[in-house]
Image (cartoon, rainbow, N blue to C red; front, side, top):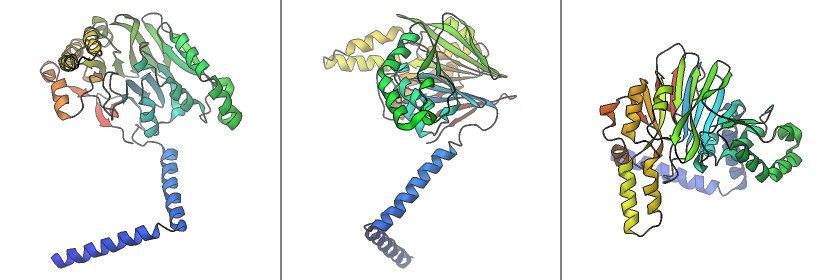
Length: 358
């Protein structure tokens, strides 16, 4: 047995040395480059097979953290809603579009963007999302963006900042790939609680939440055929979330561990860090995991997903501390990570929890 292993090791080393020597030749490098590029292009053409190819309402976490910590595997807040064949994006924080690109999302299927409120960690990747829904997608109109008062100013600001980018890309690629007439955004201001969109068997309802001093701030409920997903947006524990999440299949709720925030605050205080004040300030305008569990229980939802995690737990121990005591209040929950996917097949009570892959 030992002799066989020695022979195998010798063969393996010989092959490795031969491969290294062969790779010094241009012809071999060219062949390797051709194979690598072919694989990358084929992945892009085929798209991501993990997105449901059957009729369902789904939610994918394209960003799971708040802005106060930045674990390398988490982007800022973003949720992708897939209703049948159409895609909608709720908030688009820093790093979220990198996730969407790495998953080979069909950007031509994105119908609209919904912004819950005007904090930077919910809007910062809006320009990159616009680019990817514009270039080569045959988009027929400007990108619809729903949001609270001020959304017109935000979208106008992005348009002004990227004016030259639009022009240069059109000059380079022409109207077929980069048509100027559909560049930019179509801002739609959400004034009050109301149904803001009805199309393709989907109804989207906006409702107010408490994220004072940020006013207004909204959550959104997505009803597609017989399935429903509610996104709380940033909020304190709020009866209006309970009301609008009533009997939903899934509630995606923000969560902040004030216990972990306080530990961070004390550590910063010891080191005379001015950011210590930040950790003190944020305690009173978010919802704790246990409070989110109580909201889910009172609303009678089937499953709770914790998102916009603050501070985002990095590793198993931090996750256990973040969710301590949660199951005693509401047992059916998921702690979101980037790529967490919830699938609700229509004409069914089934809730599938999986992860979209790169």
